[in-house]
Image (cartoon, rainbow, N blue to C red; front, side, top):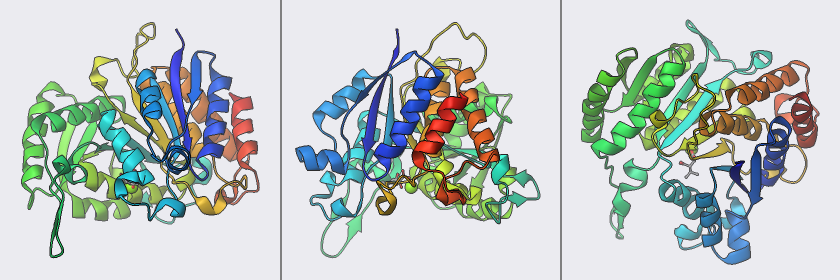
Length: 363
Ligand code: IPM
Ligand code: MG
């Protein structure tokens, strides 16, 4: 049975980069089926809602979702805010699809080693993955947001279960990498952080081969700039993850290359990427480049599709266990950068289609 992929191109450069990612997926395997639909501002304009029921239904039927980007100045002032693309589509998709584990790798491809001034510290180049809890914390706070003329309240709430499941995901990923997890929090101030530490210390018992340590978020922000190479897997709550992942992304110097995955379902229920390739496990996930809709360059063929293409590679790896195919895409990207086929953000003159086409022909 082919895996079903819901394609949600969205706004701005979303459609351009998504088209290239689909092209690459089609080139690397015949085992996927695609169905496309509207999301974000494009959906709002067409239907009055950034996440129409049809779109949510298509996502629920699919094995994975490939998303471009949503939002833009055109919809920034839409009221109520539940109808804005970021809140009405992105946050709602995360919650409704229970995409609780957000994986944001930040690493530098060898040919781009010169792109960032702070890419090296004492421990070498940045190559880490942030596992960000995505459906709890202050972003959702039980929808308990109050507002009067004089005050506003946002509540940060976490349950043991919410922490446990994302912690397991981080430990599983650590097993595929250097077997270390740094849990980032604000345990000197926040009660939720103390709960995170308690639960992490319990979960650790099932992962005796993985080393766990804790770091306060302000220190982590500093350490990332001082010596990004010291980190392998960073596990953290929703808002800290939002902030630290932008910081880590910028340290790589190439925002256009950053992919992400948002997973639902216990990642430990499948073998992740190790061994027994005959099983064909499916972890439901949504995959999207970290960059936004970049309306200023939309429609000009200037957008870098590599973030979307590398997100597609993550889909193959995490949702479908197709590690070999994911490796092929990642290696093709590296060799293409090596040969200087680059979009303007990386100092080149190639178009979005040139880059997508080159990756597709290489794989
Ligand atoms: C992200 C974005 C979103 C977030 C915004 C657009 C709501 O910054 O995916 O990091 O804060 O989660
Ligand atoms: Mg963010």
